[in-house]
Image (cartoon, rainbow, N blue to C red; front, side, top):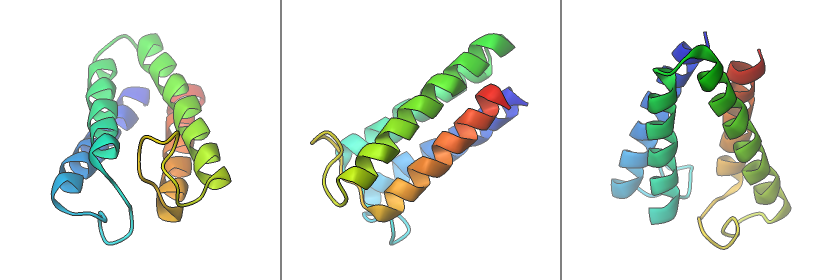
Length: 111
């Protein structure tokens, strides 16, 4: 199950990362910038790498990224409409999406 979820996230994160280079805001909702797009692409590439590793490695990756996206979510809600850690553009729609990603990664890692 973990690997299937990671493969799904590979497609979503990579697609969003690429779309962000040509369309900001993505889908008219999500603020992105170069750093944000690169983070999505890197997240997608890492998910792809770990989707083909042993199950425990895939779970540990998912758990780690659940925590990372959870922290990004918290920072986004605490500092709305300001770049997270001064590095990447976000807005409230991004914060909710990051929360969803944290929950999906958490389910993949601990579910």
